[in-house]
Structure formats: structure tokens, C-alpha cells
Image 1 (tube, helix red, strand yellow):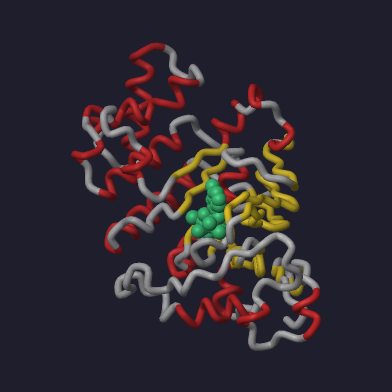
Image 2 (tube, rainbow, N blue to C red):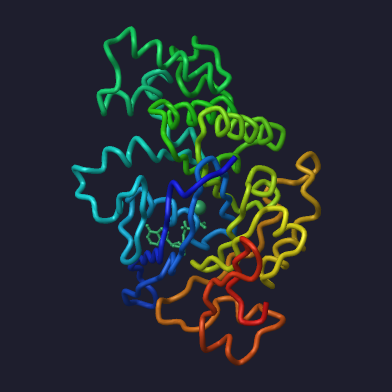
Length: 320
Ligand SMILES: Nc1ncnc2c1ncn2[C@@H]1O[C@H](COP(=O)(O)OP(=O)(O)O)[C@@H](O)[C@H]1O
Ligand SMILES: [Mg+2]
């Protein structure tokens, strides 16, 4: 069951200054991105490497500073908060990363890594309570509580990602942003971690923003899917609709590159097409115009807004 929005992103625009051809240029990594994440929903964000998915996630929790737009969580505009007021955000919106090995301190016991947010924010009522909460969280992610005493190098990739998820859920967040959480895992382990995320979403009434370049993976877990290309959302629709009848030509091309979402036979990374060129901020028109089979003159001039084309289906295309 999903109800109203828990997280609202409106007109999010994030740029980076990079050196190009000997001088500093601004690259718009995320441009005018808007969506809502509803209570109890899994919203997938899919798109090729470099399209801006990670930057959306990092902008939401203010790991990078967006130049425009609003992020509302629990009725508060996150972008307007002073750094000292970020605590509810740091506890309420938690990240799971692609490479749990990189995000775990190799010299810290797993239990201490899981307890980190609780330690920082004073969530534990003494050491017994800390140990109890760590043990409960380990069980919740399908690991024996004895894992608290182990070190990351003693764990398999799947176990490490379970620890990454445990770190995220310990403070009982409302939202989890999972950025390529299964992309570093063997295909056989991917399904187990996806199942765990789906289970936790249901049990903890979480809302999940699930980021992946892999359309088949996104399709397996998401209620709705947002398709990104060069910083823009080009289509956002319920998963069934988007798989049955993609409305944006780019979504259709992505679908064609996915044989059939059978995770057992899928070869990891096979759906990833060549990286699209990065876009300078001043570029006008639809970012997909050069690759689009149905582009018209208007498409080079004006970026089509994301508009409602059917119930709950949004498409940014002049010709869809
Ligand atoms: N810290 C950064 N500095 C400069 N450019 C960046 C930075 N982070 C991301 N980018 C650029 O922003 C664009 C989007 O990157 P990213 O959000 O990581 O995409 P994705 O997660 O979809 O692969 C890319 O062109 C990338 O090179
Ligand atoms: Mg990324």
C-alpha cells in the first residue's frame, strides 16, 4: 500500500565545474529533476552511466549542494536547513552504496560500523542497548549476531552488502536511497539482496529510492520507474506500464537493449550502452535529439517538459 509523498524533489539542478579544453566549464549533471517518492513505495531511477543518478541521490541528502530546486522531507525544505539542523535528515534518509567494501572501514568491526550513526546521534541507552540494537539489526538483514565481531575482509560480497544495509536501517529511517546496491555483486547474490531490500521495505514501511543502470534489476523491484538521460528525467511511469509500453523513444531503446528480464541468464553489465557525452549547461533542446528516430526541428530548440500523458505516466517528449 502506498500513500502520500514522503520525499518531494522539485526542479533539482546540480552542476559541477570541470576543466574542459583548457578552461573551467560548468557541467549540468542534474537538470530540473522533479519527482515524488510516496510512502511505502519503491521508486527506481535508471539510466546509463554518467546520466546523473548518483548526483540526484547525493543532492537529496546534501552531500553535494544543488544550485536550484527544492527537496522536501517531512514537511521541511532540506536545502534551506542549516548544517546544524540536518540531524533529522541524516537519520531519516539513509544511503546504501554500490561497493560496501569501500564504505566500510576495514579496521573496524562490523558491529561498530553498524552502530556508527547511533553512536554519533546518541541513539543508544548504554552499551547493552547498543549491543542489542546491533544484534537485532544484523538479524533483520539475515546475518547471525556474531557477525558484529567480524571484520569486513572476512565477509563475502553479499554479506558485506547486508552489513551496508544494516548500517542504513539501524536508525529506523523513513527513506533509503540505494545507489547501485547490487551492481558489484554476482548475479546469483543480486536476487538475494534485492529480496532483502523488498522485505525490509515492507516490514519497516520504508520508502526506497532504488538507483541502477540496469533496467532489468530496476524492473524487478520497483513500483514506478524514472528514466534519466543526461541529467533529465525523460519518462516516469508505473513499472508495468513502462515495460509493456515505453512512451519515450529513449526508454524504448533501453528496453530493446534488455533481452528479457530473466536475472538467471543475464550477463552482468550487458545492458549498459556506451556512455553519452556530458552536456554543457548552455545546451538547449532535448538531450536525446541526436540519437532520436522521431526528432523534429522543435526538439533541437526546446526541451520538452515532463508532462502527464496517461494516469500516473509522465513523458518529456514533444512527439510521444
Ligand atoms: N564530483 C564531481 N565533479 C565533477 N563532475 C562530476 C562529479 N560527480 C559527478 N560528476 C559528473 O556528473 C555527471 C553525472 O554523474 P553521476 O551522477 O555520477 O552519474 P551516474 O550515477 O548516473 O553514473 C557525469 O558527467 C559525471 O562525470
Ligand atoms: Mg552512479
